[in-house]
Length: 141
Image (cartoon, rainbow, N blue to C red):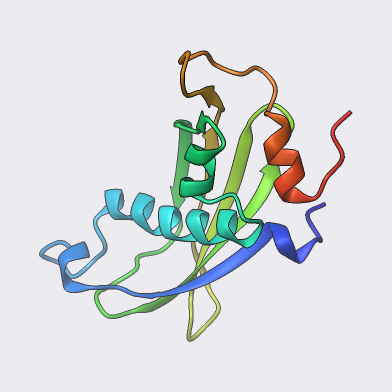
């Protein structure tokens, strides 16, 4: 599955001034915003973005996340943020890599984990709902 281009996306972001600290370095918490931009682009690639999720009757809150900072990213730097579906059967785990667009050097890695929650009852789903498999074009046993 990881080789299927539908389940990986790359977005380009030019780091704005409001994302950096006094040293001109991206504040660590802003990486989650970059991940969010890439995650939404990824989900939209198989027509299950946030609006479609809500319309399908499920919320998908982020329940776990991790970031590893390997190198700094600075004001006005052009970066590429790659998001890839890593798991989908029982939860949606998306991996991220941030690269300097000019050199291709990887600066940051991370992941987020989301779980399906039935919108009307608020109940956690221990298996991803069939709509996710349908939108991804995968069979669900």
